[in-house]
Image (cartoon, rainbow, N blue to C red; front, side):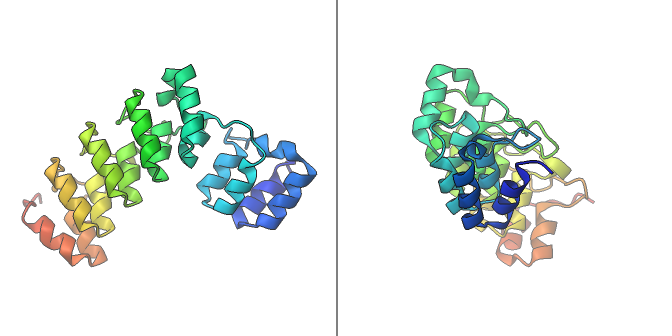
Length: 223
């Protein structure tokens, strides 16, 4: 058992009191990393326990660029990018980029800053998920971020793990507005996932009839 295991367990379960107790006993734990190299702060962000995130943040004087992107801290983000502009596309130990993290956690201003500083809008995660920032923005339903990424040239038909495109994701989630936006930017309604499913198939299976109606006018028979 690692000395970090109790803290990680408390973070997973959202036990703010236990996290506070452990950090008070050993403040250095706030700077610790998992075996995979992910910081304790980023680990808490991934679990979306925001009270714990803010608690850990109080123990840290500085953030790394991935933490800053994931939490939307523009001050820390700019500090890193001014010192080392190439960090805009740097991979975290678990394979995610700053822009990917900013997009996944819905931080529009952080995403805009990263793009302005040269971050690639199409850099995929260097892991099995292969998600790009656009996939992340669509997945969380943030149409403002989706629009930003498309305006800046994101590939609308890029695939992530399992051959899923942004349109597949938007249709699966029943987002008519997002489906319409993606189609406007050239999304292919006939694209197939690795399971041979179109966006229309996914919308029908989930009972998203408004999306189904919208896609019918775009979709041609493929099989």
